[in-house]
Image (cartoon, rainbow, N blue to C red):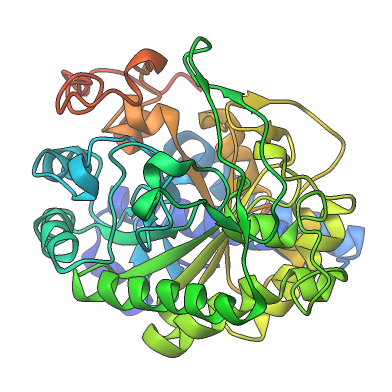
Amino acid sequence: MNFPALDLLSVETLNLDEFLGHLSMLSLSLLLSINTLQLFCTIPPKELRTLKSLLGKGQHMAASDTVPLLTPYKMGKFELSHRIVLAPLTRQRSYGNVPQPHAILYYSQRTSKGGLLIAEGTVVSDTAQGYPETPGIWTREQVEAWKPIVDAVHEKGGIFFCQIWHVGRVSNYNFQPNGQAPISCTDKPLTPQVRANGIDVVTFSTPRRLRTEEIPLVVNDFRTAARNAIEAGFDGVEIHGAHGYLIDQFMKDQVNDRTDQYGGSLENRCRFALEVVEAIVDEIGADRVGIRLSPYASYMESGDSNPEALGLYMVNALNKYGILYCHMVEPRMKAVGDKVEIPHTLLPMRKAFNGTFIAAGGYDREEGNKVISSGYTDLVAYGRIFLANPDLPRRFQLNAPLNKYNRDTFYIPDPVVGYTDYPFLESDSYTNNE
């Protein structure tokens, strides 16, 4: 938990308003710490009431002046000014798998000083792709194309991580080099899927099961991608281990039917994911590495019979590597875009993981503030509403109305429409109505 600095020796130099502002922020931080502490140990009721009553006045001031999502947070060596994260969002505007100049404006628009952005899924090799016009980071041209985009984020004080991605069997011959079969942990094909527009149907080619001796080559593709991301200027990488793509395919028992050391037991099914983590930590350092997981999701026919056991095994294993963060998708997000309340939570994984915890999955301002103030998570990732509101932290600060996102323009190739044309607030005249 991060406390705002207050040098008591210099209080005499503050005016009353400044002092009360510091007191308000300190009080809220203490309350967040108490709520987080309750997750991990028992505080006797009498002592808990005493602690909270001592902070009562400060809590009242903090509630009126401070939004929990907008409190600062120290993530490893990175000083975040707020808890609102740009989630990785596939936009399909990187023609020929090369990031384009229009992405400079797109990411710059969504950058705030001390804000964390996670770039769209970026494929690690020519076998890793399964969607049109997604960016890569395996060639020199791609690395050079990312540099001005990363520079634009850094010029505004943002922190930028690159999500590195292999789709596995979520592909077809058209996306693969020489028209070959997609690779996976299995040779079980996916059934056709309806696209996000609800009309078009996408089909997938029967995958080729990776031979045991080939798997280290794929691990090395992730290692190289991480090295390239750092060369491009990114502050770190997020390993895409969610949503039914290659790493998730290995982890989930609905998909993984292998009989070698990468299949069968939970430990074996997680082996590939952890080998990727180990290789990247070895390459760029644990303090630059995050991972995204979705143990409860069954997207792309990648479900698991015991998702909580899977999630707990992974976070405990990740602790051994000391990675920076774990970004986990809420159980209620049974499929991408489908918010369904179910009686599971990420709390066991949050308690078990030693690093920064990021929660994602359909959050709005109210729910985001609740999970931060309760200590349920450290940061909250926002996708669609951040896409449509490039100034989302400012809107949350003012409790201002949000632009509506347009699903029809999520994946079109236009470099402006549905991409950089969402409007900013015209003024700061909105007041917090909480």
